[in-house]
Image 1 (cartoon, rainbow, N blue to C red):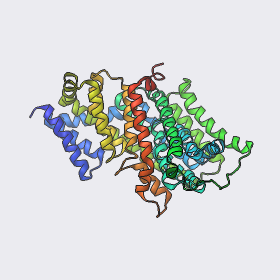
Image 2 (image 1 turned 30 degrees about the vertical axis):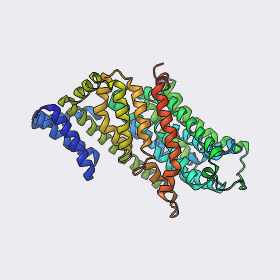
Image 3 (image 1 turned 180 degrees about the horizontal axis):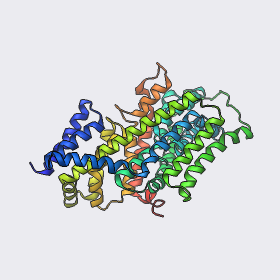
Length: 437
């Protein structure tokens, strides 16, 4: 059996193990070890595993993962999400469907602090959905807006998915963060346009009551400033320090985690037990992410040893499909996998195969990364997996709320994401102009 055939068999074996329920990381390590053993021998497989473990996790850059995760968890527990929504609610409440638009912009700002979509979905399902239903919006629309706008957490920097992509593609984390700003704004505007359009052409989808008779909580200028200042300060410290050249990504994560800790302590929203639980949760998330990166690195080296990515690149470059045919097939595959498995797993399975092909095809890897993240994030909204949808259902703790209702509410936002994805494909500078400055 030639090495290329072993590479294809390894991919098939990995998919089979995942369908059986084996954890992605364990499956990758097992398949990669066996693949290298067949291509070379057992001794080479053992040595490569040790080398991959050392090479893939010794980088100083990996300290950015626990720091940004800790910052996101501290921000969530300190009530910044509620404050962000209150500010935008106060500013946009006179606009038609203003609470829906406020949810999108609050999620965009919250994304610039946490970088985790599931955190956004959890916070805003408890904050925005009750407020929107109180003001006469349908529950389907309210949960759909939260599910749709929660995906901004993985695109607007700092983003855990962008960090993982940067590591796997050997790109600069700072450049990937810069590349996420333009598409993040495009996506937020597309969601806003979707809400305003629905409010005018499908009022029954958006509103359960024709007139909003509920009272709004009035905020004084002082109260508004008290809510705005911590948000602006944290964004300025993290993103301003990073893009201003004062911090590298790891230092920006440390500064952000410290700033979030100060905010949580000043608000007295953190005691010793909850802080310990946050540290434990940070450790669990970090270990799982780094273990997956280790497994993906081994999988990537096994595929490179087999020559399968090079054969795939030759096929696409020599066939009539060309680079954009490959890109189309790749994005469709991501959308299909998004219906079944989680975001990071999709990235770790596909990128070791796709990155060499994309590079050989002459595609900009930063632009390619943004397209990857947008397509993967659509999987958070699509059935049957739809992680954001199930997160909202769990966080709401409402027996009357059906999962299908949330999926139907999120459907227009999937359409908005498809349009945004097409715009980024047609106009690559949307994703690359800041990163290439």
